[in-house]
Length: 307
View 1 (cartoon, helix red, strand yellow):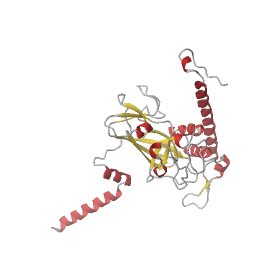
View 2 (cartoon, one colour):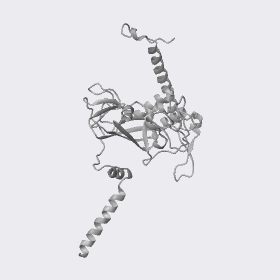
View 3 (cartoon, helix red, strand yellow):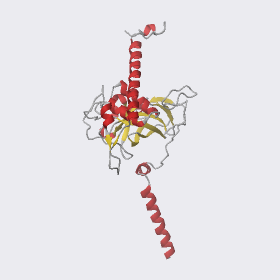
C-alpha cells in the first residue's frame, strides 16, 4: 500500500475517533439502544382522531414512557415516547414533579419518593432520601414555546381542546420544555447527566398553595429567581428573612453576593400571596359544589354559598 493511501486511512480513522468522542453521551446511548434512531418531534401537531389519555395513566398502562433530561434546576426537556402502533394525545397536568429515578417508586404507586425530613407541607409519603438529588416542581409546554395553541399556557386550539394536550404519532417521541424550580433546599442540583422522570405532584405533596405556585412556574412567564425563592419558602419552610440573607460565592469571586435581590424577594412574596388566593378559591369551589345534591344539578343553577 502506498504512503499516500496509508496517510488517507490514518486521517479517516482519526476523524472518526474525533466525531465519536465529541457526540453527546445521551445521543450516543440513544443510537446504541435504537437501530433506527429518530429525532424527537419538538412541535407536535394536534391529531383530533387520536385517542386521548392521561399522561400518568398511559404510563401505568405501558402506552407511553417518560424521560426528563434536566438542564439544571430551572428546567430541561421531557421526552415522551408513544409505545403503541397508533397515535395518542396525552393530557399533561398543569403541574408535575421531576424526580430522580434512584428515589422513585414503582409505577407511581405506593411507597416513598425519598424527600427526606425537610417536609413539603401537607405532603404525601415522605421518605429518607437524604442522599438523593433535588426534587423539582413545575410544568410542561411546547419545546419551541411558540408552535402550538394547545400547549400549556398557550390557550385553546381550533378543535376546542384545552391546555396540556399533546399528540404523539405511533412509535414516535416528542420533546417538550420543562420549566421548574428546586423543592428541597440544600440538596445537589441536577444536570444533563442526571437520571430523572416525571411524577404527579400529589405523590410528593398535597399542599394546594405549592400546587398553584408550580402551575405559574410551569407557564415560564415568571422570574425564575423569584419563583425559586417562593418555592423554597413554601416547600422547604424557609422564611423570607432567611432567603434574603442567603449568600452565594460565584466561581472565581473573592466576595459573597446575595442569592436573591430585594426585588426578587418581594416578587416571591407576591407569588405566594397569589398562590394562596388561588388555592383558597379552588378549595371554596370544590367544597361548595360537593354540597349540591346530584339530583338538583340539572334543575337549578348551582350557587356557591360558603357556610
